[in-house]
Image (cartoon, helix red, strand yellow):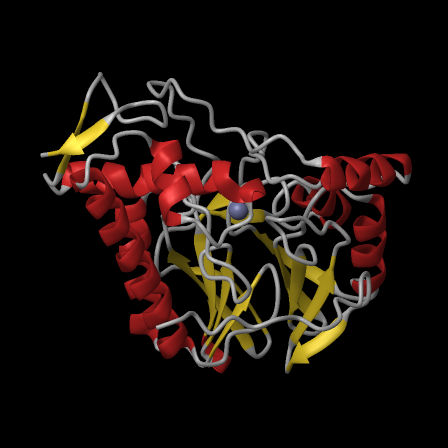
Length: 323
Ligand SMILES: [Zn+2]
């Protein structure tokens, strides 16, 4: 079984592209190992519109959105979750249009957790891209937390987040990537805007403590139960065979979990060694992120009573043993 990844041929940066009836997308030029070609901001409706994930702080993306929204009345600014490539421009758009920001809530700060939640340091290629971007007044490329974001309106699972002529967007709470992650369900098209919950080009990084593997599995099932006709991720191309794609996604995670458990049972105690064993095909640049995913699996396995750890809480430097 392999995940049937989809690729995006041409991001058409800054251009509002009609990708479905009542759905336009503008892609920001913030490509990175976490964002693929960049952040895709969706504009739903005509005349009266909602904007999903305004995106990163970026002069060019802000200008592109301003142009794309010319003549439109923005009635809601929806945010899937507060990572720096999704939510920061919401403040600007709110200021400009007066439309409320709508999300599950701000980022949950987990104060009892001692380990950092910060992304990998950028590699040379990304440093060069970041320097060039900074010189051009553009966004930073890494995915980090947007702790400043606080929605005007909080919506719970199943509630209508926004509606306009011919379109209704319902909030689907999908914790896993972050605890406050929402997908938005365009009822009229059975289309789901998945944020970073399900992406067509890559698996999703689950970073504890805010990221949670058990919740992630549940949230994948939640999306499968909706039986969407199409998934529109924030990054990359749409997924049109959602049932099959999600099955493969779930199987991939189950295989990974089985691999982590087998490694622990075979006597591997430390996460970096598990990553070396389990992620042989994965670029080393992503090994720190992979370590966070392994940690997320281990936390679930501890919860399941199959693995134990030494110390006060499970972390990336904690030794693990079979329970
Ligand atoms: Zn994210």
